[in-house]
Length: 384
Ligand SMILES: [Zn+2]
Image (cartoon, rainbow, N blue to C red; front, side, top):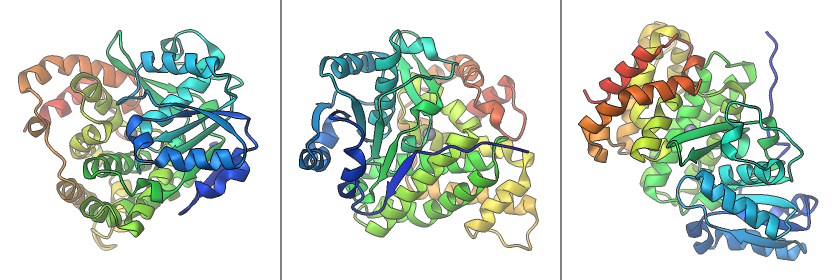
């Protein structure tokens, strides 16, 4: 079967890569619109970027009004600021939210209209150049054609996509992730793991994404528990930064599946951080999908060393579920109840969440067929 594969035009990866990216960035424009969050700005991370821009004579404006996960209103404010300041390219620096926002801003500054008009369509146009610099190791936004923005009127997370949203330059500098707090390390690491496992067991998996997926899964199982316990471990941070990027490449080409489909509604309605809601769901969702592809789950189990070559695929696949449990425990992932979600309120919204999950299209990528009824059951199982 033929397939196509896309990735950022240029990737600068390794310790100190932000400082050494000046020669590439200066080719993109004269005035940068920097999209970020207030904490990243305060911590001095944005200062490393702006010092570098000053050195090569590039003017800039900082837009740090992205608070939490982006909404349509924040994007509209950003688009206005981009235009008013007459910027000609955009740099997103921070966690997944500023990166997604930067994508949305370059697109909407060009296209006009409401961002919700583009749900379900391929976003396309002649957008300004885009540089993405993650300071967490997880969302993989720096490697993808996707962005997620909340529609504040309908209270749903809109997933938008288009090849033109893939950045011109992705800069993966793990030294920027050293200060990520423990809860963020857990959430983003589990998000990256979910991306890699989902893409390896997606109907759209292909020979190239398989390579990236298994590599990312191995790095995350080996290094996420270490980084969670000791955020200053540079080796662990480096491995996780690479893994998050690899996993981003995976979902860019093989898509996410059931876990993300079911996770977005929990995030939108109960305000659980994206990586945590994925982690809450992953074992239950994959238990459902397991008999759809024992061999694929068995590959994962063998790569992370929890199953031997002699074991049957079914037994190996089951030992992967056990390993998932262990890594969730190591990262202290809460249950819905421990997170403080009200059970009655949750059950009252299951039907809407299942409808939204199916409508997102992601569950249909799962290697095992799934319908709304199965999704409803998995939401219920989370409380057992
Ligand atoms: Zn994700």
